Amino acid sequence: MAIVRNPFLDDDTARRYARGRPDHRHVLAPALRRLVERRVDVAVDVGCGTGLTAESLASVADVVIGMDASLAPLRVGRASQRSVAALAERMPLPASSVDLVLVGSALHWFELTRFLAEVDRITRTGALLMVHHDYFLGDVLGRPAFRAWFRDVY
Image 1 (cartoon, rainbow, N blue to C red):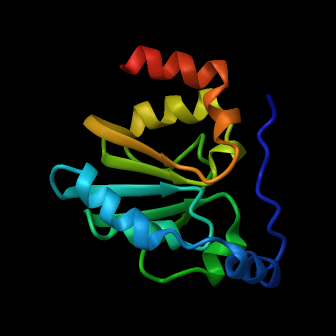
Image 2: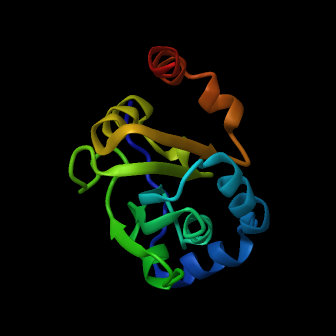
């Protein structure tokens, strides 16, 4: 399967995108605090876009890294997190260095098998993978690669 990328071409497109995104921080931050048993050292928001979801991670993590394949949303996004331009399937993070991986409405852009292998590589024992997805969830859950990975992990 080919890797598909979010088509941000320039900062104006990214700003329009940011204005149109639903803002789930008022729901997501409290949910994260309920689900995460202890404050974690490092959390990564993969496919962070302009950083709305990454802001919620600050309520449970000491270091928040926002990662997106497109530069434009990182340039126009929120300054509350560290931002890195990188593919979800090839993150520039050391092995076993992350406690929490969050994907908010971006999983459909990833090549799922390669992304899940990368999550396995970068996460510490006991890490969490959380997917907050307001569309395409049926498509993601229906993918054999996700079902097989989920079955193997749990």
